[in-house]
Length: 183
Image (cartoon, rainbow, N blue to C red; front, top):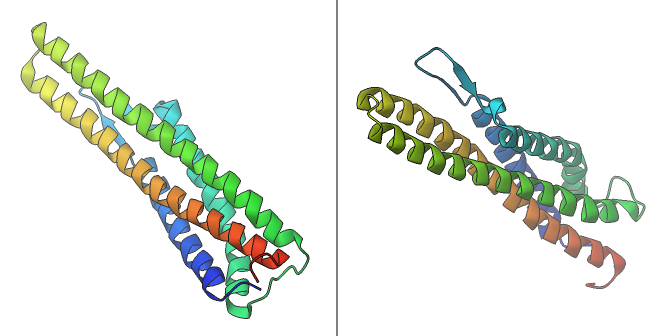
């Protein structure tokens, strides 16, 4: 049986992961702005941000499903399902979910920083072509705020991905200790 520290650490990290993923979803879903011509720009208008939302939702759902099992394991020091399948499931599922979350982080940061750079170049070009600097500054400010908020949501998703990666390592240790390799 694993020491009490591992199940307790997994439980705490799952709670932090869940909070980070839910916060990421909330920040991303509330990210929008209105252009001067009354056009609304929402996060779902950019496909990569839909993917970020999907990865956060998948991670949150998985974490919610795992939470009761981890609470029982941390409190009782034994598995709710006592076959050898639960450590195996945790081992593979934690790795899979941490990779899914990491791919969401990559997509979110990739599109956020790249679009910001391209739009900054576009605004400079429009300014050089004689567009009104006041209206361009206002639009650029809205665009920057939109992408900054999306990058914050992706950063919070990164916290969840890191926590899930640490959980993945702990579930590896837990799996091997249940097989007798570490005592």
